[in-house]
Length: 315
Image (cartoon, rainbow, N blue to C red; front, top):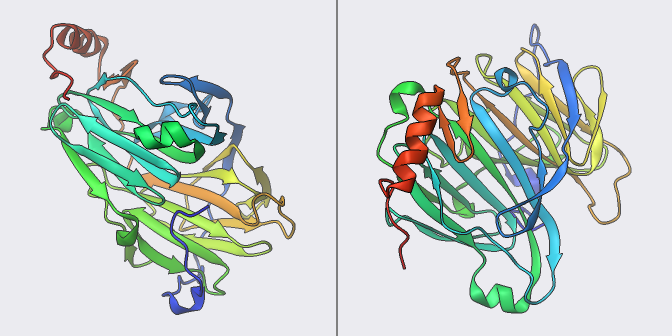
């Protein structure tokens, strides 16, 4: 798992652990992501399936893409398609993906890079592996998170952020047992490069076997822990949590994840993504690629797309 790695974690700044009076967030629920297919047929796990949107707020949707080893000719992407009313955050752990949108944004992202696309008032975009990768095949693994926009920001001008792996905020736990990559927001004094409309934080952590991840977390934010691979426990209850499972946590000051002493041979550490944000607490009307506040706005988005009001494919 390339993403971003550090040979010696002891050189990184340390996160502080819970202090007197701090509360470790309890577990509200644990769900297992079902599998499916997206775009032109690439495999995904639907991490938020079956979870009440009110517990996810300000997030809407999360797909774990892969992990899959493609044979030559097999890599797949998506055709041109529209979005309005939210942001897509695509984080690549292994592999390469090209992105292009009708506003002229885009680029190539690879191991540890993130593309942060604010659809806002609406655009078209395409995500696809480069031609050389289609020919060659190879490992592909990533995430796509959908972040909702508040009512007064759903019509902002679309924008694109190209976040390089070298820009991530890196830190470690008090015992240097976990590598913490801050993609967006601020965690324990370390900030990620992503600029967000909705106050939030997003972290990818690699937790060594037997190590404990203790993350200070903004009290006003919700907290979600998704396991990319590996096994361990979450919360003060030490609730079991493994690959493809999502834990929704309650209120508190800290998030705790314990990695099991023994991990599967294919993945030597426990890999987790931690997300949280300030809930928007507005009505959500979700229709396919559009996330608005009411059904009329969703129907308007479909009409605008069909009439070419969200741009045209480039290239």
